[in-house]
Structures are given as C-alpha cells and as structure tokens.
Amino acid sequence: MHSPLADLPGRPCSIAASLELVGERWALLVVREVSLGNHRFSEIARGTGAPRDRLSARLSALVAAGVLERRPYSTAPPRSGYHLTESGRDLLPVLQALLQWGDRWVADSPPVELHHSPGAHADHVVDAEWICRTCGEPVNASRVQRVLTPAGRALSGLPPEEDDDDR
Image 1 (tube, rainbow, N blue to C red):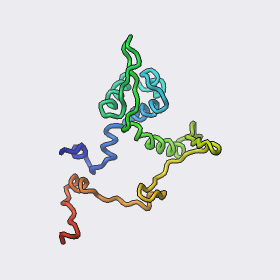
Image 2: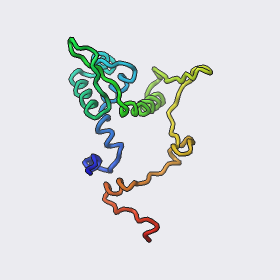
Image 3: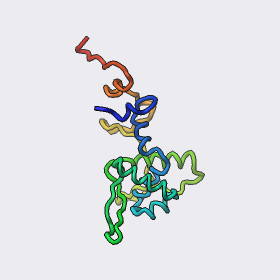
C-alpha cells in the first residue's frame, strides 16, 4: 500500500501531510466559518474575506479530501451548503489551539473567547491542553518523547526494529 507521506519532501510526518490538505490560510478559515454555522458560499466568503475564486477552489479541495460535505438546501435554483464531516470536526481542537496561541502571542486583546457552559455553575473560558489518552493526566511538551512507529521507520528508510524475543 502506498502512503501519501512517501510523496512529501523532508521528514515523513503526519503534520506535513495534514498541511498539504489544510495548511493554506483559507482552508482553516473555511473550517472555522462552517463550524460557526455558516454553510452557504456567500456566508463563508463574508466570514473569511477570501477571494471568490480561491474560496471556490478551497471548498472543492476540502470536499474532495473529506473534510467537508455538500448538502443540498434548494432545488430551484440548485444550491448546496457545506458541512463538516467527522474529519472536519476533528480539526476543531486545532482551531482552538491556534486561537489560544494567537490570543497569547499575536492579539493585543482577544476578540473572542471560547466558554464552557456546564449549567451547574457560571460559564468559564476553555483552554486547549494535551491529555494522555491512557491515564487522563495533563501532559506538557517536556514529558513527551517522539517514537518512530514501524510505518515511520519504513518511510525513513530504517530497518524494522528487532523484537527482544528475536535476539
């Protein structure tokens, strides 16, 4: 089976492959707008400020990549809206992390905040953080190590790791 990572220059990495799909400015802004409930082309264009030709190309690419899906909302004239797929919804934490980073390092004063409304008590601001999927503990970058998987070793041209039992 051929991996799309094999076609990328430099270090084989899912970050690089992801950026091939959503790394262009308008792509993530489209995902933001659709997640905010703007499904029509005109609404997405207004919210992103993207030139119409670039927006059209980006929407088509995101549909082809399975990040968005088109759903008809009118038959006369025929019109479709754009909606996030599961893949698109999985990008929302990426947007949250970019928002949080931008609030800290770019914006003088954050123009928007994400609030959690649990119902039992007052709304409060939500922050993105890494959580270990095994133990549920918050993790910081200094406590994370990069480990090549068998696929990563193959893409890097490294031999497979030997099992301890094979020694």
